[in-house]
Length: 378
Image 1 (spheres, rainbow, N blue to C red):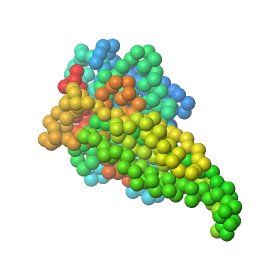
Image 2: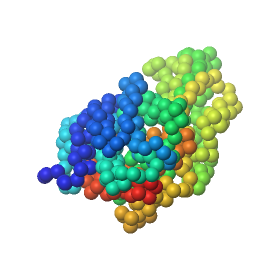
Image 3: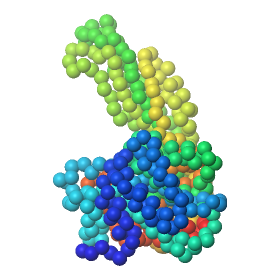
Image 4: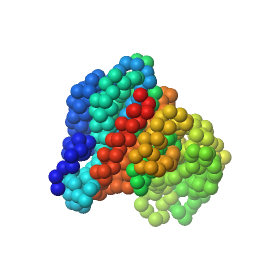
């Protein structure tokens, strides 16, 4: 089947054909840079460690409307299970298959073409337009958007509004807009004990027995009831390891990892303090280290949300749901500087899966939505 006559689909296919498994950009940002420079953007490549980032800006005035996203993708997994090569974009029945089609190279293609169309019609637009692109979103996320935002802050550059192209839609394009995200805090636990024979428990100290009542209490606690915008805080244990492999030996230590997805009821310090209170109320010798992936953020009602909702409604005829669900995104690094952030992108049902795909018509519609947001704000 021939390629549809849509420049965003041509660009999407070019991007998917570059196997940019995190943190490798595989030339995607250079491809975008060439298009952006032709529009008058000043493009900077910012490399931190193995990560390639792109900051592009057109204009020197406020307000600054930024589109953001990532070129890196997760590994394809067993390629023999795919219906076609994951890095050979394949069109079938109105769907484009390939790793990164939905998460999130379709967003990048739609942003780029939307910018071309908006600037072509409004070369003297007010304010500034920008793109913030990283190759580190699917990986450790330490040398990507976070470092770019730090760089911008160090030279007093501020983003007023940011639209992330993450796949936010659920069943139909635009049925859901993310206006915030829960925080993510992980705990790495070690419980210390004394190894011994199971027949002589009085001569040992079993760390599993010590941890069991603490674990039960952590699961039973109602951390909060959530609020108008966030669901209740979630506590989940993701790994527990102990034992030496013998059925008659109690172990000397236990290790576990757990995660909180939490609402704006907490910040990471108050949440950590509450967890330590639970542990300290029990007779347990423990060590607990923490990793903060990001605090929760919420964009208040205002021009960005209004423009995004209007753009979606004009093209779908429906009011989108405003949500803070899902995992984390790079919005957690952009919002703390005072930026209003929304996420609007394609359907997320196939992301990170075998035969990831996107509807071709949705990419074309998404391009129009992004352009309309620019028209409404600038």
